[in-house]
Length: 88
Image (cartoon, rainbow, N blue to C red; front, side, top):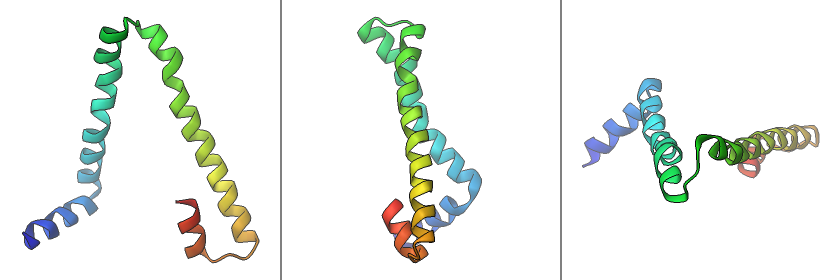
């Protein structure tokens, strides 16, 4: 069991395997928007697109403010380790 965990950790550190894992995590969400939501709620692609932009804008704003927060904390003299724990 310990060997299997070590192999999985090494594979996770390889960028290509990490990309495959990320795609496997994101694909069900994409299929949710393509198939399940239109069938259950009777929405077309245009109405889904009208609401689908909201999480992306939220992520963009959060990343932007997180960067500003980290930058201001660095200017205030905080340690990098403390800022990483705060922002993450």
